Length: 144
Image (cartoon, rainbow, N blue to C red; front, top):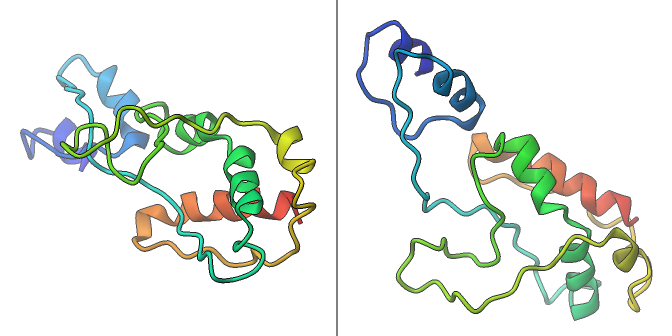
């Protein structure tokens, strides 16, 4: 897509893949427009399965996930960490929700203890999400 835009084959691409946004932004012949998006990436934790039935384990995973690092590495800074399954542009988004701050030490010493090596497989629903799924799987393995 970005090559087609730069070569003049197309006039508009939407959405712009984040890995190409910086290059396009620096191209004097391209006008990159940014706006809040509606996409939200999250992982589903099945609460009926141990150890996820323990809220402390689920909280530990939230504390152990460095959302700022994910945004920087996977979205090249063209995103913001989510604190809900709804994007802030959604009319039903709850602005009062608080983020889980990244705190690996808190995660390691959570009352629930160390997470067992159960987090061996994380599925991505769509192919572009595969890299995100791999990184999330890595966060879970840190705790194993």
